[in-house]
Image: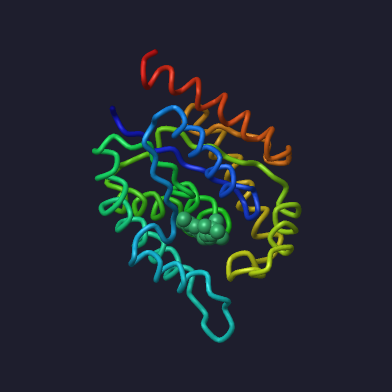
Length: 213
Ligand code: TMP
């Protein structure tokens, strides 16, 4: 069986993690072999990069370009070490964030040069694109309120201004409009069960063509 790369994207608190878990259980119930992974932090090196990137910022400023390069480094390692071998082995990979996060956060959020970001995404992935990206669309304030309610508190990026998170949201909306086949918007404000039903409907349709049944 040919492997597939299915990515989950969205602003903070959009519910990716629990939807990915439910999706993984559903795919496994169909006898599909699944790998759950994430960026940043899908490899051992990536876990260290994730800690550097998301630790609270006090007295440890990270420049915007450094941030961009650290996300790219995490991705380069992840693509070579995890994504490519597992796709070659026929796995269905469910990946929490990928290249669109860099466009939304560093491109729209930080206003870094978009063509530089696209080049870095290309260098890091060697051109490996997602087969399907589910964009869980929730209002930024609703998502951040969910995060604030969690024990861990807000990380370095979550602590950014509302204006920053709104730009990220705008980034996802524009990306989805420009890539209507690859990126599918799902209303993340619905109940967990309703969101999962919609995702299974979308994935079910894609499975029919991917598995040709
Ligand atoms: P999460 O895995 O809990 O969603 O956290 C990852 C954080 O890193 C989130 O705030 C989004 C941010 N991020 C970027 O800014 N750029 C990127 O390229 C990626 C993958 C994540």
